[in-house]
Amino acid sequence: MTLTGSEAGRSPPPAASTKGGTMAGDDLGSLLGGLLGGGGQSGASGGGTILGALLGALGGGASGNGGNPLGGLLEMLTKSGLADQAQSWVGTGENKPVSGEQIAGALPDDTLRKVAEQNGVSPEQAADQIARTLPRTVDRLTPGGEMPAGASLEDLIKQQSL
Figure (cartoon, rainbow, N blue to C red):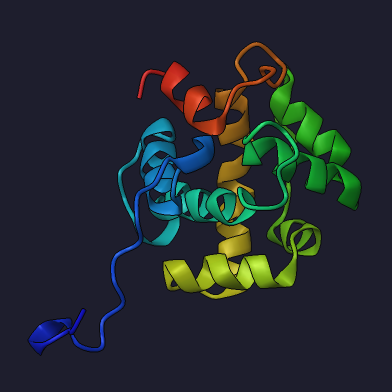
């Protein structure tokens, strides 16, 4: 395939694939943005896009949870000393806050850098946005107070009527 004119020098758009039960980061970002009540794609309103990129990046390897990168992310946070916070988001009580610094410490550096690059922000800004939006998102995706067994992230989002 030869690129000409305005196509030259541009990267092809990411494929919106659902292969293997996982969605591409852009699709996850759109769905998570809808779940969070906003469609924005930049700044503080882009939390769904940041989370979508994060979960898309984690979907390939960090998930041992039947194709659900959210479970893999929560497991990663738990192993990093954020078990109380992660459990509060899944549970039915009040959501405990988490800081961007804590998120940055829990995520692999290369993953956070990749997510930040995809969203045009610094890794610190990405971590801050994840810290602001992750508790509410997990809470909304686990309305029964636990991670549904065998459900993919896409299934969880669809169950929330998006």
